[in-house]
Length: 129
Image (cartoon, rainbow, N blue to C red; front, side):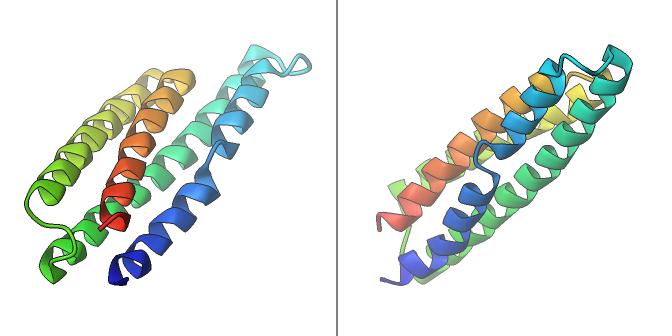
């Protein structure tokens, strides 16, 4: 029962960032009325905001896992698997951080999607216990 209370903030965070930021970025890039010079900065700003949110989501998942491990809700294989997912998520976020310098908004969004998917798997592990 306790794990549901730990996982709830994670569920809410996942729901709140869902696909909206990705759709906003796609809409900004696909806008037929904007020039490349005006659309690219908007897409990058959206990608940067989504990346910041994804980093916060990752941190929240790490905190939730720590609490779940300390309380005995998720230990052993559960904790090991969740830690692996978090490590992979972090690798995607680090790669996305590097893409910011290149101005690769679609690449950033792809890395964010992969990272958030792994964080959702962590939430599922914690919530299933």
